[in-house]
Amino acid sequence: MTTKSETPQIPQEKLTLQVLRAWSWHRQGLDGALAGCDSATVLDRVGWARSIGGANTYLTLFARAGIRRPEADAALAAQHIHELPTARGCTYVLPAKDYAWGLQIGHASAEAAVKVLVRLGVEREEVEQLAEDVLQVLLRARDTAVEALDPRGLKEILGDKVRSMGEEGKKKGASTTLPAALGLLQTDGRIRRVPVNGRLDQQRYSYVAWELPASGESDEAVRARMLEGFLGWTGGATLGQIRWFTAFTVAQAKKALAATGAVEVATAAGDVLWMLPEDVDGLAGFEVPPAEDIQLLSGSDSLVLLRRNAADLIDETGCQAVQGLSGSALAADLSDHPIVDRGRIIGLWQYDPEGTRIAWWTFEPASAGVRSRISQVEEWITADLGDFRSFSLDSPKSRAKNIARLDALRKK
Image (tube, rainbow, N blue to C red):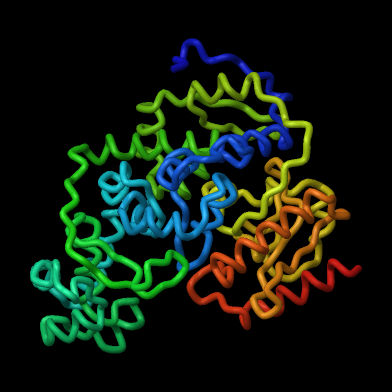
């Protein structure tokens, strides 16, 4: 491992956006380096996959390692990977080695839900007692035909122990006391949420009892672990990007950075990236691959979501092409899915299930390689998924306008 004192100095002018895009592409395993790896290994190497009831996790695994849905679903069923609430209280799909400390990172969000109820007049003891009652119900259900229970089933069993919070509660996002109790149990590793049909791109869940051992680490140590992972996944990030993903305070982030031995590296654009010393060593000798390398990714893929820097991945040609478009083609959160070449966004796409096709548009005329990759991903979506949803409420109807827009732009 490269130490801080051995870290090479990289000329600032070398670190152009083109180089940094390709570097992130490489660190994200999109260059074929992860071919043949299993699901847990991919997520360990490139970072947790955002799960919001969409298909991002499946494409994350397929794009990097050629993993098909049955293999990913089998890894989920075997608990080699799992969807858990973690950074910022958001749900991601994690490898098993990260379960305990990943949950610990998300504990503050579970506590925040309890605080909302307290402000609505619910005593904390009531929420904790409800959590214990839920756990006992799930423990009794273990190894039975109804081992997994959804929120409705839990309410039926628990009856008046689940309190309705009325209209005021709905306004605060707390219709009943049950979600907060479930949140406490999840972040403690005492229950886990499982998709009712075993798929990651649906959002109907049940709960089962779990006995995940705690990490045994302090919150400070876990924050350092989070930063070490994040910097490895991204290949380097600004302090602002670090704080967005982690929700750490400035003091917490700086202390965690110091614990990782991270160093500051200035870029040609004048930004300052925090990087692990071994990644600086790798970047010093890195060259942008000369050959085109095309991937279709989700709009919430780790390449764009971990740092929310999609605009940095679009060059001048792309910026001119998307000027004036409605939606968020240049925003932190993409309105469509990106077509990417060595870290550079060169076009956009959506899946049209009615036509069993990908609607797409590239900022410049598409090469044979682009068309070939589109055909491959189109075939995979049709065969493995049936549709490609961005998030739980996405539907063919909701994306029809985007599909029509991409078709029109491509015909120009």
